Length: 347
Image 1 (cartoon, rainbow, N blue to C red):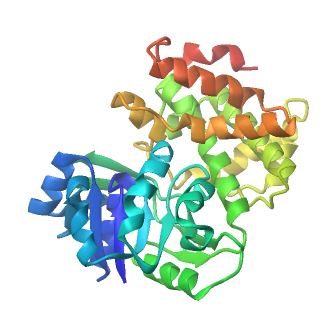
Image 2 (image 1 turned 30 degrees about the vertical axis):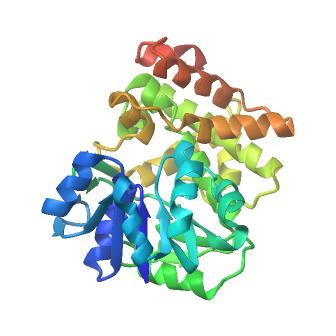
């Protein structure tokens, strides 16, 4: 199996590097010239909670991808930002083998957009839970989140139709070179649950400048993140999805924690403390990394998607709507990062 990593950023580089270390044939394709040049000359340096490794990798700049015509990819792992999904899918589809498919390993819910370009039969979803990785420089990526406990699937592979197929089982087995992987029959529920999990920090992080541990340690930001999760659960239910645990907490438990029900709120906070044990103080929302590097965030595909679906279904999700707009103001230089950007939303 020839695997192409399209978008060798934090997730793509880490997953690709671990697959190479596991003996798989991988080509890394990226548009960051310095990063590609470093991988070609020095390989990839992987560090963090799974140990420190150095692996030689086969890397191509986007401008060199035509070389793949001589050795097409069987699995194109798509790791670009959600807003780059369509053009990158158009770009890579000529490099898929006859039975090749695209595996979306992204934030948001991009499978439908991919399927419109390559066909539903050539799309497989992959939901990542608690992997927590960060690029620390060209050719360098660190996993800051602790590995999952035995049996907990970090990679959850799902077909669009929800059935278990040989190819889903095959790629799940391959991904065990990185961490535990399994096949899910509930891709859409998994997707929305992970989206809701991301949305608890994806707006608060960039607006305040807080890392994830700091955000959960602060009473007001922690409670705001809980309310964001609650809105996400309500919208997911309105969509008819079967939601999975979010930050290891069942959906119904999230909904029990309301301001006028302090015992339920306290229950969520206590359960979050256990989940936080796997976090490292260096952990930050990817949107905060983007702001610090002067890049566009994926806020439209995370909190913005929850706000959009809520509007379509007539469900209230005011916090997601407000915070999405404020992150866009921050991107545009119309807000100054700090706690003052969200203080009016505290109890």
